[in-house]
Length: 136
Image 1 (tube, rainbow, N blue to C red):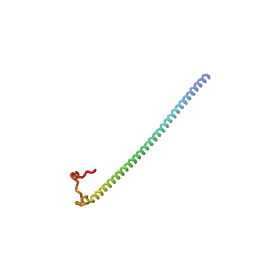
Image 2: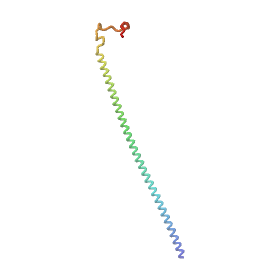
Image 3: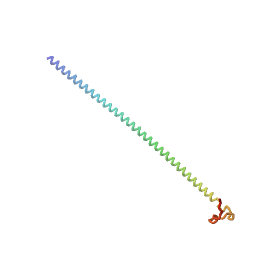
Image 4: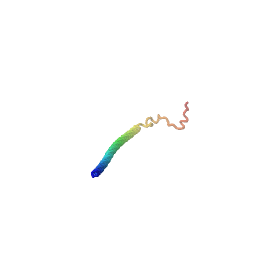
């Protein structure tokens, strides 16, 4: 009877130990899965932060490029305006010079007015050219 009780007790103890070992093993596996899940979640969060940081850096770079492009366009517009202003000033100066030249020309006496008609040689005609002595 005692051997039977001891055998039953040992059998119960063995099952209990096996159950505890199995439970410990399952708990360890669950903890390991949880740790892996947390590690993956942390890695994913870090990756998202990295992507967000890259996105923010890209956006900042794009904004800088847009600002630089706007500044370049502004400079080009300014250069065009300056060139147009210089061209207009040159045109106005040329027109003024033409006016002065025309006024000066108008103020000059004509060739006929410079010398009296009596002292002028007769105008050249075909006949007078053919009568001229050949030189040479």
